[in-house]
Image (tube, rainbow, N blue to C red; front, side):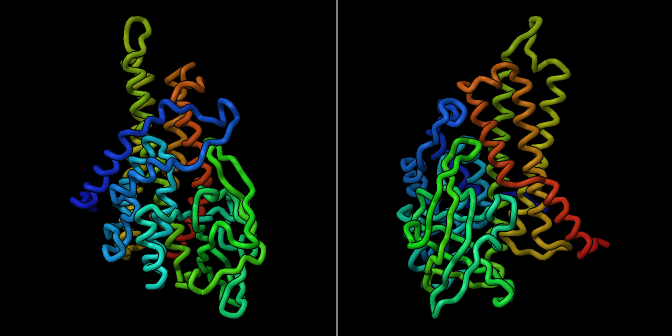
Length: 380
């Protein structure tokens, strides 16, 4: 497998580094761990800079003002976002736009993509189901009402729901609809939609959405077969990219700290016990990276394989969920008392890492899914 990035993909990553260079998460302690307060909404100034750098429409076609790139380019940009804990819905917004581009109709694309690419329209996705662990599709049920649809159900831990203009909600049709799932583009202020505030591990504001006969027109629904499965795979893979960027930044912070912290007249980085732990975490990050690019490549190319793309996504998720946890735990250990200081930046990275780990879900669940895929698609 050749993981060499194209010039366009590298240019997107370089543009992201330029935009995120002005973000200083080290100076912002975790609000939930210091004052108990909830973080403010999305960083509008950063959102505008991302739009000006043409990074909000990476996956949109050039006809809609986008860059026409792929999931690999998006993950390269998300990796940079993870390094600075960027407080913008870049993943959810980009994934929702990609779903409209790939599975929506021409009218939907014409109406939404150009505005979303300019940052005028903010999109997010309700992907966590009723409890945060169940599949999202059974949490909301859609039924026909003439040409329109009515939505009922609950979605928990929806990111950026109080800032977004449109929320992409997967809705299950039940046995009468052939067990299919549609994607409904629900306006934030829709009648029958209530949002109860929740707070993430990182202190960010989430929402529990309660839908009671929320009516959406046919122009606000994506009915294409497999649209939700594809969108969910992209969201998971993008979360793995955020975890990778965060982990790389934390390991670098740890290397800088252990290089200057001395005991017995020597930097502790020269001690074998410290070096071995840091090396193990470096291996974790390289495994996270390799499995991430494999999953992103499968999503971007649609290339066939012995296993469905869901298998590559499952492997990437297993490594990301376990790897990012091990990286921040080792960082806390090697920082000693500084790691427990809420005024020190590592504490904020730890909180975000735990949020990403919980968002990815337990690795054991994906190991079980991978086992099921191997049972139905034998490698021999």
